[in-house]
Image (cartoon, rainbow, N blue to C red; front, side):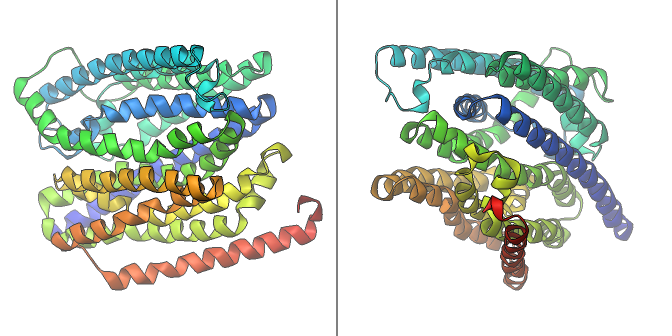
Length: 459
């Protein structure tokens, strides 16, 4: 029976991973296509403003995250209607609090700018920013009402309908953005697209998914379990999101909206790759490793490396490829106004080296020890917010971007230490996958030489 269990789990994980990969890949393709269209309709500084507003909304969301979806996926009570309804009520309340917090922050920015407390060249001084933050944050209220059927689908590897919903919502958002962009040439086209996408997911999660329908109720025992697990997720998410968005928080002070917009273009490409693999880690690795931890913990190390190997090879290859050919990618995709983003992309691609350890983060959640993840994210936070200001002060913007790309290296000793305590390390295998990095650099260099010879006008 045990011999048949692992292939069943493997088949379900690969099928779910295939849907997640295809859906997220299609979504990112639409996002990139929309970005290419919108960069021709809007000025670069508008992307700087929307980058700050989005960063604020996401930061507030993660500062209040208690891991509701992760808890549903890994908990033994993850299929209990009382547990799911309690999580839903907490989720709704959290969405309302987030929007109120965003309104307060938007008001504070407006008053600070009115009184001249912000540097005039700062992206935070853009007059439209407070209104954009207030409008963008409405997505928190809308998302708060989304059904827990989504988390249940991840728990049981039933990603097909979730992926379809996300693709439909992104396509609708893309059409909304482009139509409004052509009609108004305004930043509000970007804001409207984001709100439409969130609304579509929320509505369709209730109407188009199988599972337990939510209703307003809560159970004290379920709430206690959510809080017990969630307190470490809260700490981890709070420092983690500050580390993830810390680059835009800091650069928003150091540079103007135009430069921040160029940086946002470079980050978009790296973040799309990181998001794709991160999505697979969260939606496939976590439920798979949680099931192994519940039913056959002796096979955890084997399952861990089975989950990691494909992502390691892909991320190391892309790290090398973009480091060698990042400026070429920007020149191919964008008009000359955005060419400066090429050098930024080459540096930022190095961050993919550490993204591959995201599976380790999921195994800590699967084992019910989110404090390990909280420690790792705290290290990232401290390193980023100490290293980047120091580099910018002494060596300027480019040095600061190097700090952004490499700061997560400080987490690796902690990951290997935690993995040693869990009996997960295999250093021979860790070294073997590194061959993908020079292969990526070689391919990127050859691709650049080939295209520069055939299309010298791009050089």
